Length: 327
Image (tube, rainbow, N blue to C red; front, side, top):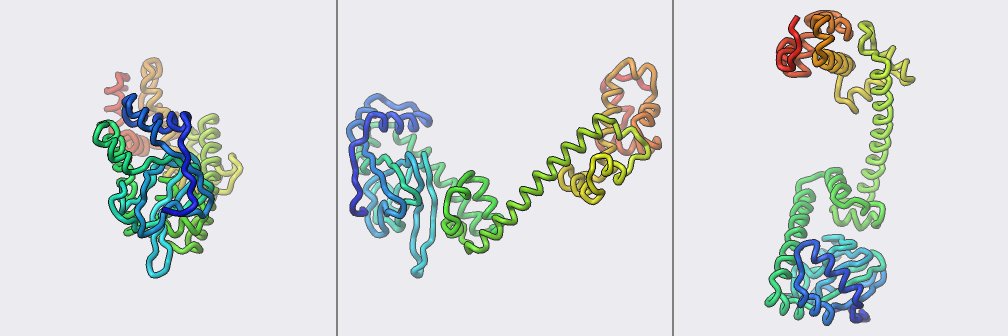
């Protein structure tokens, strides 16, 4: 174990904290609380301080109250990051779990870190008397190994961008908090590559925000003004009305809505017709074809083809199923 680590008896608030974490997984016997009152320890380590080294027995299992730790190993004199853990994670030697063997990795603080700890000898003793502790640790380990398997898979088969996106999705906030070279080591990519991916991803996100803004503006304008009912509506005229270029509008339609211009407009027309069909008063006074022309369709065939493409059935069948009058 790394020298100069100062372990102190945990306070009652520390015991309550860790027990609340355990209770979120399974109810805890009051006698187990007494054991934690006796044996739970706390310590604080500084950034870059080693918690335990390679080739030594890790004597404790730790819980991170505040801060971040990383597990590392060395290969051909190169440091390889094997995992990163932050608040509310349990940490110990993976290869020497429960003090069963020498550790093949070392763990170092990424930030100033506050920890709670219990000695493996005490933990192993408690396993024999407290079923709930066995269950809780099984759940914790299951969660860890599932994440480790997913991480190993994406690093083995995914490209650099896929690894980055996986890490960003499964570890929200980590990229803003942790040194980029550390994340690069974990994902087995060069720091320069990860930096480039991060910049490109940021630009893409900015573009997505831009697309979403124009998408909302487009929907609002088309709906409020019922522009879809104009038979001669064209992409360039719609672009002018909402104040963007035709090229930009095409990008919004294709990338944000995944639709062509005509499919986008016809979706509004079909929805308007469906709503009309559900209104008995309208169906008493208008035929389906009359509704189609009023909605903006220029021909019967265009109306029938679009309706069936979008709804999955003909206008007549939809009218029958909704109780509308067939005219």
